[in-house]
Image (cartoon, rainbow, N blue to C red; front, top):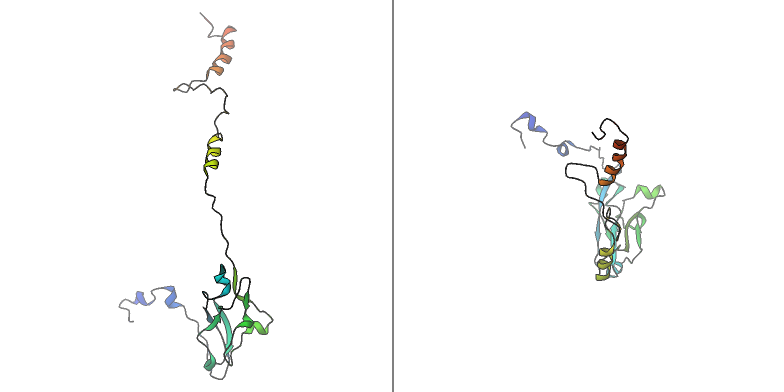
Length: 177
């Protein structure tokens, strides 16, 4: 695509990203290739209520360019609940190796496990009646006298007014005239 404006040459970061690797036909290359999973619905573990978890989506392989597969297929159709497939379980084409295995790392790639079910409590009539009987936060306990409402202008409640009267009775400036 030719850009009319020189500023439009690089339209996004994805278009600028490039991994360059020299490829010689007689030298092995290392590259990550995708894993394609098949047989999820046919697995006995899935039919028994299990769930398939893909723990990896790709794997790094080492091979000659002529032997490079487009993807590796992972068949999970025989997996039961609590089964795991590891890198060593992959069927590799001739000439293809997984470097992780040569370093002693046999990572899991897929598992079948029990589905986690969250219990959602449905309120029953008894639970709703019990909740209605609970006191509301900040409300006085049942049978307690209600507090006197404050005056709309922000006057002190009656209890504070009684405490202020003894000061006037002592004969201060504001005593009775």
